[in-house]
Picture 1 (cartoon, rainbow over the protein chains, first blue to last red):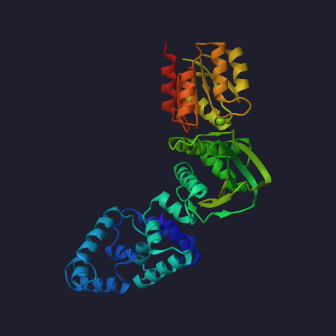
Picture 2 (picture 1 turned 120 degrees about the vertical axis):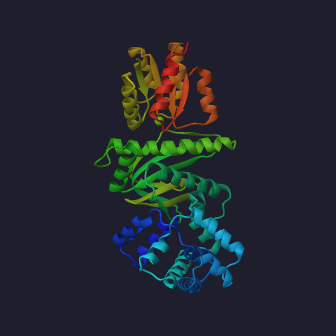
Picture 3 (picture 1 turned 90 degrees about the vertical axis):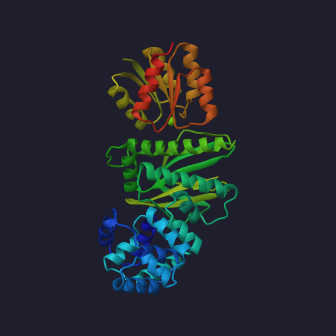
Length: 292
Length: 121
Ligand SMILES: [Mg+2]
């Protein structure tokens, strides 16, 4: 998942074209992640130290880790942690960029620092982003204190992103949610949660994205926002909310669902708090609305 | 195999269910979009089994289930709903539903639940 966020940043900075990025990412399969890359990402070695170890490796027949420890760049503890991480790590975009000669270690290190700074992440947060833990990543983007309704909203979006990954698109990127007094939409599939919490939920999107989303969920190719498209997204919401309400029930919060409804070209007014979570899919943007 | 009535407000879910049931050599004798339509079609079609959604406009699946069992106490009804919370499931089963499947459903799961319900005495 970090590859997607960082890849997005690389496109924004115009370091690669979308075509180049796609080509680079296709090389991901089964290359072992290099310890030097992991060390830079973990912030335990500088690019200068990594380059020094690589240089020494050309002179002596010793492993990266051994040299790094003997040069005093890593402790034994750090090394074994990195080796553990190497076993479970997906190849990172950074490594491919370096391997392909598109960046050197120093440029990668500073680009990573720029990304962290531009996105406003702390050291701990950037580690979460690299962890590939969907729930933790979603929670990271909801940078509000997770109490009361914000906690509920955060859980809702975590579940939503998991459902998107499961049924619609693995390449989902969530951005920071915002709050609004009113919300205007083109196409909107909504559903009311009733009972202990009263929440209006929904997905909004423009024509092509709404149609594509519906086509994927209905597993049939739809040509526009017709009855099947409206129905498919309504049923996606119904599944999402059915799971959400069941999860709440385990915490002794009892809610029910009203039938899902489709609306077009209209406006939603805030109840107490109206949250909107923009979500970038590989085929366009949707917004998740949570009005409580 | 069985003559089945599908009651669900979602056209997509009805279509998917119909395909699954027909591939399992059942016959879909009717499709209803809410509880009220479901009751009407149940009376006229006298199906062997009903698949019944819960969250629907006009009349929900729980009220519909009660009415179906009032019409025929031996009615075989399999609930198929996105709402998988304990109290709703228990309520349906206590009322007399044969089974309760949560959406999104898999073909095998649906066909197994239906053959269990048909073989129940
Ligand atoms: Mg329904």
